[in-house]
Image (cartoon, rainbow, N blue to C red):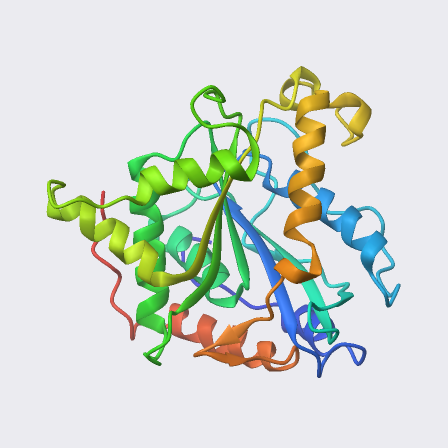
Length: 304
């Protein structure tokens, strides 16, 4: 199909968000986005396993997890939602539903810029936490892509005077410079501070790019992961077991998953500053996709 039109699997969306156990609860949607073959689906699978142990409803039936596999070709196409919700006790004691979402790998040889923008913008607009998964370092072109996608999402949103998107978490895999910034969230903060620092001496384009990203998200975070070990990175038979991971990577993976999914760190989805109930997300998905499939919004000026 050569068209760049996306279809919404409405029965699946309804199954997830109109589930009677969660439809009137606040909802937290955690999405992992990023380039093809950077381990997004594997990470979501680890989060799924963790949430299964925290879930107070025990309604999540399928233990097979997110489909993922090693290799050169992408395994995820479009946006995939894990339809079994998890119910956790929020920081205030209120129950909140959590759903996980995976996106197709951006910038592979099969996907147009418009498709990439739509998938990433839709993920950004519908997530409480958007994890941007990157290899080795955060480069300037990663920030430029982010600007392109978020600008596309902003064009589709009515201006409400509030910060348009919620939490953006950079995940840097295979971080090579622990002597410069240590692994984990502490080093991540150092990297983020340096990266987003603006000075009068910088060219205007570089400063504006950083200001755009900081004004688009209500919270920014970064986490640095060590190399996962040969088995994880290179062996197609890797099954996801901790025993096969480099012990240092396993330690930081545990730390990241338990911190990120701790009730006090999870925020319910808000749109235009208002908290959204689970069932209301069905309308938002439909509305956003209709906008992206239509021709009302101009494509942002490409950086390419």
